[in-house]
Length: 152
Image 1 (cartoon, rainbow, N blue to C red):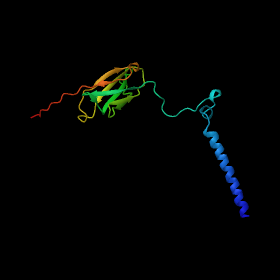
Image 2 (image 1 turned 45 degrees about the horizontal axis):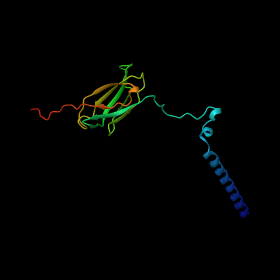
Image 3 (image 1 turned 90 degrees about the horizontal axis):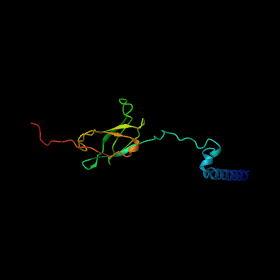
Image 4 (image 1 turned 45 degrees about the vertical axis):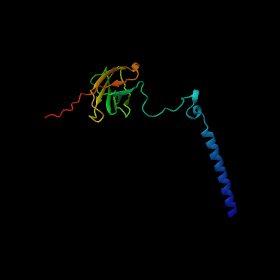
C-alpha cells in the first residue's frame, strides 16, 4: 500500500514538473507581438501606465564664475498665459544641469534664481525667453558684487 502511494506521488510530481516546464517554454519565449496583444490583427500591445511623455523638454547648464552652479531654482512660464503660475520648476544638480518639461503654447519665459544664498556664491536673477526649436538653454549668471568692508 505504501509502495503504491509513493509511486503515485512520484508519477504526479513528474507530470506537474513537465507541465510547468512546458508552460515556461511556451510563455517565456513568446514574441512581444503575440504575447502583448493581437499584433497586426487586433488592438496591439497593452498601453503603458504613468504620465505621458511630454512633447518638449527644456534642459541646459547654469554657469557662474566659469564653473557650474548647483542649487539654482529654474522655473518656466507659458508666455501666452501670463500670471497663471509656473508650468514646471527644478533646481540645478551638482553639475549645474537642470531638466524641465513645460506644457503650453510653445513660447516660454524661463527664470533662474539663486535661492541658496552665499552657499554656492550669490548671483543675480536672469530671465530668458525660450522656444523648443532653440534647443538646449545654457545660461551664465552674473555674480553679485560683494563688499569686504564691515559696516561701522
